[in-house]
Amino acid sequence: MKPMLLNRKVGEVIDGAVVGLSGYKLQITGGSSKSGFPMESSLSGTGKAGVLKLVAASGKSKGVRKRKTVVGPVVSDDIEQVNAVIVEYGSKPVDEVFPKKEKAEAQAEGKQ
Image 1 (cartoon, rainbow, N blue to C red):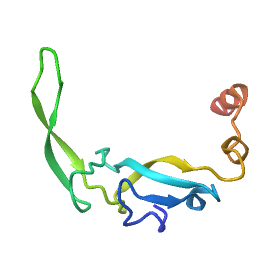
Image 2: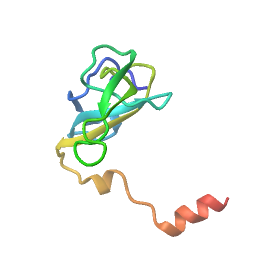
Image 3: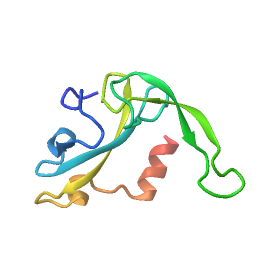
């Protein structure tokens, strides 16, 4: 995990230079832990907890809740993946900073 992302919370806006997008602003929208548990903004801290989640708002299972394990909204060493969206664009287009690979190149790399 990059040190600049540690102790940041879900919903916080960060500088895009952390991931190579200088001039951009990114908002953290979520993530998941090393164990695969999603981040939940209703908790506090970095630990795991079991919370009741609504299964369906309508239909046969309307009102049914299940206990799901989630982690807190603070980015720590246990967080493996961080999701973010661009809230402010920089001078260069994203496609120029991160060029797309052609499908043929991707398939050729997969065969080797």
